[in-house]
Image (cartoon, rainbow, N blue to C red; front, side, top):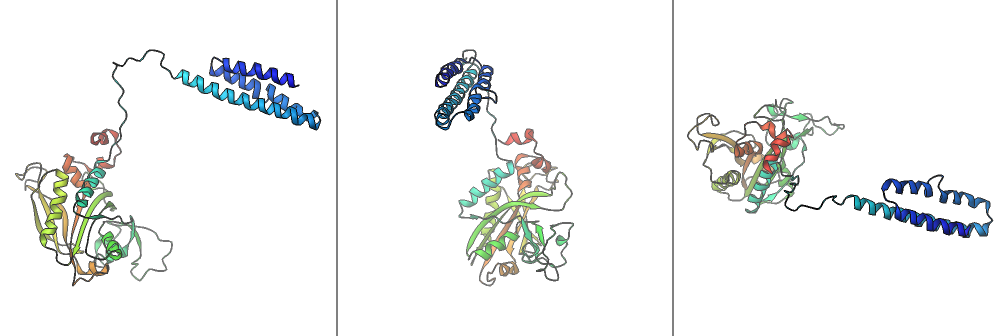
Length: 349
């Protein structure tokens, strides 16, 4: 039996080393190690031997099985390597194949640009949760109980499995955040002033999708809170945002506007970069485009964040990031950003 094993070792390993193709190698594997292979049949015959012979012969057969398996694996790797070698000499003068390069989404790229710009001004970057509550998104933001933004026509409300902790108005109702501003109170509750921070992210509105509106879009907010904050600090925030977006200074103007979470509040316009203020179809012939709201945090908002409104003051700006990206690249349909069309996105690599 020992001579048979030695002969099969010499014959089998030689055949494996000489196998010219993967198909021939697979046939040898089946012939030796398959369910009816020669080595497998030897192992099946061990049951008829006495215990002493079974241990000696079994060890030799198992060694042969392992050596054959290792030899097959090594020969398979060698044949695979050989099959990948070019059949013809390499011509180094032929043009190469350009790799498929990925790239950042234009909105994400702008977000990073703004993060870098504000980091240079010692702003921290903060991120709040996308699933929030009526308390943070409306009550803390000084929205009156009957404000239309609370209705389902504007806000996506979530069904809460546990409604036992809600008050009579359901102040702890969960929603997908309709704006970023609620995150500012979360930050204020965790940090002691003075501070300056930005908080970019995605928000959700129950809106009809068209060329200018989306149900999910990106905003970018910044907030400074100091004891003595000159109005010029707010103007600096605005100039920083717009000069970063457009790569050059952009003229702005501020008009009085009402928003529940600021007092006083402002509508902030920028000079149309298409016509440089001369008037065109983009700016509806007025030379100015409304780009963001801003203003000083309402005292009720500061109090919700645990800050003494008599001692501290601040300045908000709230940027619709997708709309600025549209102006940066001269696009006329916000739906392109969410289309996942590779032809469109590949332009911004």
